[in-house]
Each structure stands twice: as structure tokens, then as C-alpha cells.
Length: 287
Image 1: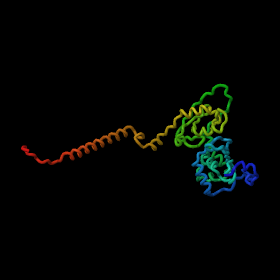
Image 2: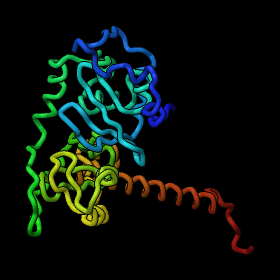
Image 3: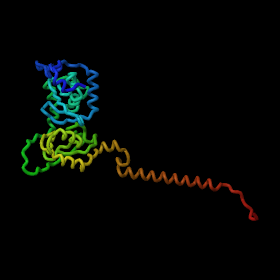
Image 4: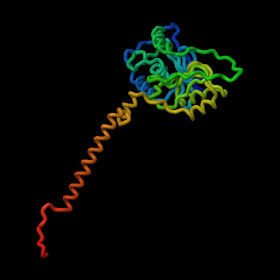
């Protein structure tokens, strides 16, 4: 692996390559997904990456658990601050994760393995995300104790804004932005984001408002329960009596009782037939 410090100190030909072309055009179009990029995409989907912070409209800080975050930029030419991208100038796991998870591109989509995209294509990828995103609230100086806001209900299909995984699939405690937007997110993911913030007050990674204090986050992690499974998912995962109607449960119970009674009766008859033979010889009274 290439060290970032050595690349910064020495003047290598890699530093002379511009991150964006001078003429503003996109790089050469790849007709088919190269095998190395396909392996990188599969590796990115298997890793646990976190969206630590959004730096700009098309720039994000992506990190791993216990590692330093890297800045990912998408546009006419994609770029990432990780050593792998600086040495290969090819799509890395951070860039592949942003294209697939954040922008919602499928692996079969040609834009998922290109080294850049046009402004129109980028707006088409970002437009659905901007619609559901809550409004940004300005940060104000708090002179008194802040008032908690109403929590937003977590529905089936909703995603955590940090790991971009559905709430009902990861089965992790959900914490909420207490004082700004009320949006929910995984407690473990919020702990990863809190490690990269300074001070006791935490900012929300979604609305950038006041989330809560570090002590309140730890308290909510101790008292928060796992999100309930949806009806369809619970019926799919638990196909026992708990997923059936009460009438069906009683019917199955009565059938089980009848079967057990028949088995007990037949076993008693067999035991009695072994003890006493059917034909006994007649005994004379003198004997």
C-alpha cells in the first residue's frame, strides 16, 4: 500500500496528473466493466463503510470503523484522497461505494464503472436524494436548554443516512436527531461519526444541526430497543405459529391433541395384548 506522506513529500509523476481534465470533458468511455473494477465493486458492498460527513453537493467523507476518512468527489472526473486511487487513478472501494450506495446506481449501469459523468447525468443521480432530504436548519447559539423535537417514524424501506442500509435488515438500535430534524439512524453508525467530531455537542450528519451531547447518545444507546420487524418480514422469517392467525393455531393444537390420544390408545392396546394371550386353556375345578 502506498503511504500518503511519501507521496506528499517527494515529487513523483503521480502528483503531476491533474484530478480533472483541463478541457472540462469527461474521460474515455468504457464500453464494458473491467474485471478489476467489478471486483472492487463487490469488495465495496461487502465492507462496512460509513458516510462520515458531506463536504459539498458532490463531495463526501467516507471512512471505516477505526480508520481515517477519505474525501470522495464525483463529477467530470471522479477522485478520492485514498492512496489506492492516487496510485492507480482508477475506481477504489470508496468511490464505488458512493456510486452504488449513495447515488443508487446498479452494477450493470455503465455509470457505475466510468471514471466520470456529465453534469446532466450527475443531476439525474442526485435529484431523487435531494427530494427526500430534510431542510437544513441554521445553527444558532443556545442560551438556554434546547427543546427536543418530534421523532420521525421509521418505516419499512427507510435507510440509515450513514451506512445507507435499511433499518429492518441490519437490526441495530436506532437513535434520533434529538434537537434538529428528528431523523433516525443506527446507533453504531452515529458512534463512528462522533469519533470524528470535537467537543461534547454532536452535529447531525444529515441536517448538520445540533444532534445531542455525547452523554445523551450513550444514554439513548442503553435504553433504545431494536426496531420491530415488519409484518411481511416477520411472516417470512418466522413461519411458525406466531406468524399464523389464532384460529389456525387452535386448529393445529386440537389436531395435535387428537393424534396424541390415538397414539396413546393404540399403545395401551398393544401393551395389554402382550400381557394376556387371546386363547387360554380351560382349567378343571379339581386342579
